[in-house]
Length: 127
Image 1: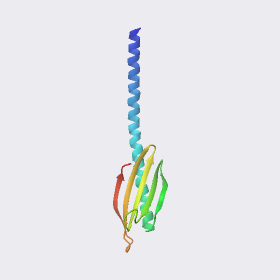
Image 2 (image 1 turned 60 degrees about the horizontal axis):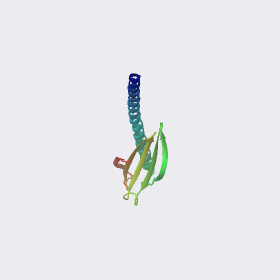
Image 3 (image 1 turned 90 degrees about the vertical axis):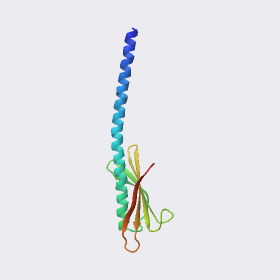
């Protein structure tokens, strides 16, 4: 009788270990996928805002949602002080996919004379 209990306990531990390992493996693969989707959504948000700034040099926008496939980006654009230096736009794009979040910040320099828009910096910001 004790042998059966010991073998049953060992079998239960093996089953729990296999289930836990399978869950961790699946979660890490899906986590990478969702993280990549969130980054793509954030990049798309930056590109969309940059196009709007090229078309309208005085473009600003409070946080608005942009759907990209199954992900979403929350994009905001501010211009000049107090947000950023004069003649510049700051784009903040937060990509979301499931529980993953990726945030990008872009600074665009807009030449007042020629209207040329140049990307000054693009970086990922930690959340």
